[in-house]
Length: 324
Figure 1 (tube, rainbow, N blue to C red):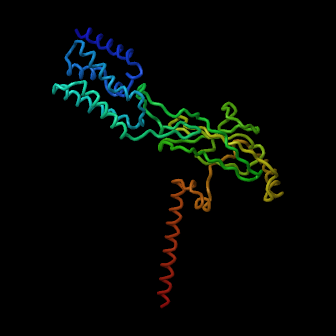
Figure 2: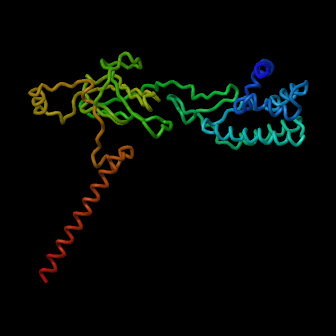
Figure 3: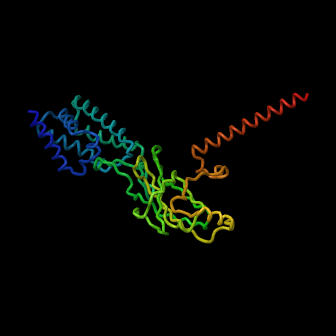
């Protein structure tokens, strides 16, 4: 008997999908099971008979207005809890000999109010990136999706004079996850302005979201790429085309040139990029420089200065008192 009953339940579910199609894939089907809905109708009208099929159709039709609902992905658990409470309430109404013609539309209206009170799905921020903060859940198919934006961000042009410093900031205009974020840098030389990954090679010395080249030379003309990842999953790829122009600055003296020649100094494309280590002045005037490690160094310097001042004041006080 159990096998025919199971086959009957499956056939009924397939029939519901064939009849209602898109409306059937509403929030009702995402957050309740077929057995739960069948059990509720059986409690209203009995175990079998024409009224049972009528009840199932009325149940799905009442929630047809929620077929195209989209919610914030993080609100799924709240909506699931609301549907669980709804099924319990409908079971209580059925046990009290209520009418499903009244109960189902009333339950659907209450669920619409619940959905309007959920945190709204956030809009995507163009032009690029995998933006998890904007992920949303679609009741039309019981699945989630993120922004339909490319991973590759538009190329940014950076122009510096030969011998000056070139700096790149791997920063996006959308919120990143707070954990397991890493940055890796690549370079495509030869003056190429490209986003074709086959031209790039890794620069292992570069790390963090800020990197610089000093002094910039003509051989550094090309495209630098920064890849932002969370747990090895790419979130965005930024590109910077570096154009180095002009003669070296006046500070490039003959003595410096001779010294480099003695050491057989030659600029190399990937080896001269380095993490940005700001000076004290840069720490004070550039907010992005105040990383946790830099804040710790500033606090240590402040504590050392305070301790030094205290010791000097104590020595002066002892000397002054001994003179009296």
